[in-house]
Image 1 (cartoon, rainbow, N blue to C red):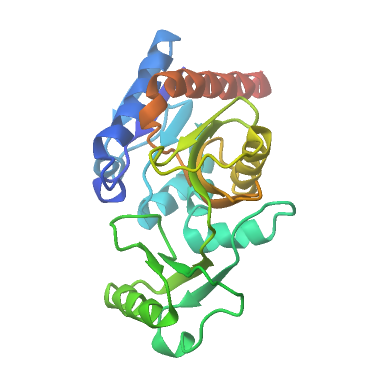
Image 2: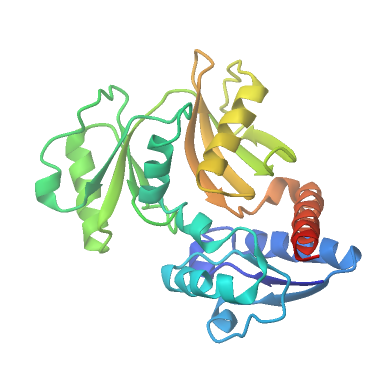
Length: 280
């Protein structure tokens, strides 16, 4: 068996350039231990690469042209893709929110997707937001600290909107702020492995909640965009309700890299065995 890993673009790994590369290397090391031949490739090298001969391909790249090239090549290679291009594209924020809205039982904050043009933003969203709004660029997740910004009132939201527009960001999500504890979660599956931690333990109130509910909501969010290796953010509100904020493909797993690499490699080997069984 032969596996290819494609690194994430540096600009799409703000403050995580090393961590993103290290998790992919660690997974490939685990696959090597399991007698799988592995190759690692930069996104720039992928642009002109022939993907023939690989049994499984693990793309961390996120830019639209590369994902569209991957999508075109997927049916031609016969390889297993984890996560496939459509799933990564499904994590682009506007698409992700459409999938969230179409998924029964998934809990996330009230959100409107808007154009960043001025005429689309004369009024605040229809939903109440006494605690303010989060304005988020509508395509990829954070590439800098200005991509997700809190606005306590609509006048400030207008300023953030202008900044988005000046960077040629066409769409934005306007999301209700939810009071509570901010949690980061990671998963492999469905149903194989799940873990979580507070973003900042020093300020977490440690509001009570059911971990099973968090895992269920995280898996529901991942399944609606067909992710097998995923991470994301959630809020635990004072009443224990859990809100999914984001879901993304191939996070850095920085705090749990050793354990995560073993779990991901297990998943990839299982997918290889499933593919081999179908061909037999």
